[in-house]
Length: 43
Length: 373
Image (cartoon, rainbow over all chains, first blue to last red):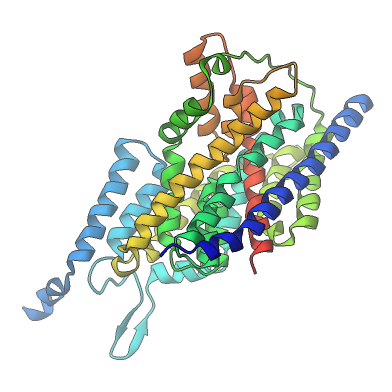
């Protein structure tokens, strides 16, 4: 029932998934922060 | 008499168990107010499809299939992923991303609170589920019904019924699931940290640009999530553009209500006794709970890590709001803050993280679709 090989096989997905989500988030945060400054200045 | 009562003799004890499960879901919806818009139709649907020879589902009579309306709705609305996407337009039209736009860095906590999804993926694989089923189960941790349905259905899992019941039940149980996890991971002193809310001026231009920017960035990295994030952001664009108020109102009320109604009862097509009453269903319910627990832990622990490197400490409880169960999770955190210090108002901070969790959960769903072929 317990499959340690299957668990090990998912670790790259775990790593890539969390890395991917933080990278996308970082890009969004930087973009929105810039837009927040630019649009507030333009007012 | 046989024509009249012969069907009664076909009744299977397993079907009666499904009636009880249906009745429990209806009870929870009505008496405990737990996600009533979904648990009630799902509960009633569970009874509907578990009557012997139920005409609501497809039956074979004289070697000819009579298509049941529930199966018809399933094929028209869930198998092709239409219902969850339409529901996302309504959800997008409901959400005010203002608190997030005031403080964009809150999004990192939403990202951290998706850890439970990936942890549960590994755990479900360890327990013997194949990778696609494990991914479908793990997405319960998105704490977001449409995303769970979309991803689980995409992988064609046979556990769709159990996954949806778990996803919506745990969302309703957020006020019970999250507080013990938060308390376990934080000290009383940390829970008392006060946070001042500074309302940053968010221009209308930014509110309009936000859904477009999110769709483009997410879509470039995770093309498979474009439908999900795109429909969510389309709903939000309608809300924020300022010239489509009546459409926005229709999306968040009429459309969302209609789709929710059909979605709930249609899900029941996957709750036939022979598919649902298995040991895997119990395992899925346990794994769903684990996903919620580790999501909460991910958000809180990132907030604690953040505090190690900054002078202006944040209350680590707000990290827990990163799971996308909106708005329950932010309310839970706000109430816990008030319980520790009646002058500590965390609602707006938690709401910002909570809506970021909505976006992060869709990104996580898209990444799962991209990473698992």
